[in-house]
Amino acid sequence: MELDAKYYLTNFPVAELLFDDGARFKFCSYAYKYPEGSDFADWHQNYILFTAPGFKSEFIETCMEGHILKMFLSDIAEFCDLKRPSAKLVPREPFFSLIFSFDEQKKVIVKGSLWYPLKGDYPNGIGYSLEFENKTSLNAVSAFSEGIKAILRRFPPR
Image (cartoon, rainbow, N blue to C red; front, side, top):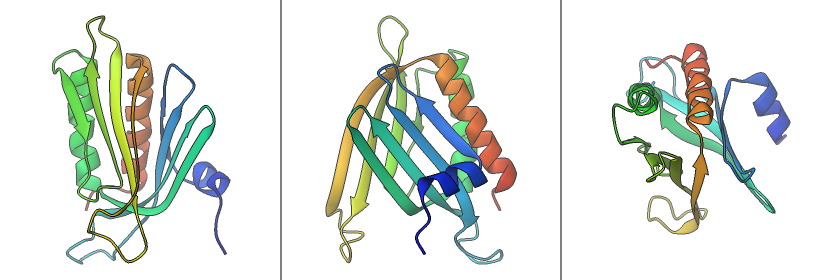
């Protein structure tokens, strides 16, 4: 039985990033991918949803390491405090990336990418991809980081 977005987004902690034009990037971790004690015990299974006016992209069972999220939290806190010019969330598995920076007016610019491999072609880089660039606010970035904190409370790095 395939689960829908509502299941993931109501039963697990969600990090949501809202953009000025109404687009949204959401992800949640819903399980550890591998058992504790394995070499990959820190890998989370994730659900990702990106919506923009007239567009929806959904990814189920993507993987990301918890310690990558923890490092990003430190970077994004400094970014929000204007102590660093950019912050990057670029997991080892290349299903998505988000790069935060400022424009000349100190508005937050997010360059992102979503990639999903064609069946049997991973890790060759063949598949579907979407790259986007959008504006948001520091308040929206702070709310996004609070969501990541909730994810890490439920699924701490191990």
